[in-house]
Length: 227
Image (cartoon, rainbow, N blue to C red; front, side):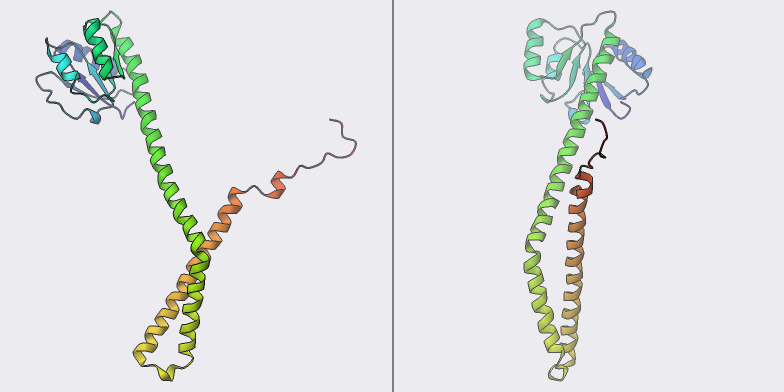
């Protein structure tokens, strides 16, 4: 996950050094930021796809974790008692605890990879939902235009007819009025062309969406053919 952002919070320099060294051996390491509890000031955790909380000084871990948003993806890799862990999981449903055993780095990288993939999948799903909403709004506008096409065509016909009647008797109009009526007539013709093109596009889209009769037609087997 080369484009992922990971925040590593720990007061043990060796923890951060070992974790970043192991992570950089991966094929697509994420971007990593290391902070200790003294430099943590409640920054916006939503800027990071994953937070890894390592060992910290007494009293700092719970305070920092409680400043995170409940939806934050957090991997806790630090000593913690069962009661405190239960309380933390109650506030952070996505919190995962990895004990500091011999293979903690391998386990953390595996869990982190799955967490980052899940975060990416959620991001893509939300982007798809936003795109679907935009498409739905555009579809509503298109349906409204189709519903109003008849009324618009009637209005255009009236405008063109009246403009043409006035243009048949140019002597009764001033030069300025004649020019204005010609402009109205030309713009009405242009709007009519746009509406005709819209109707043509709508028909083409329906043809694409609806399978042709030839595609749906079942071709009978030749006589005498065994099945």
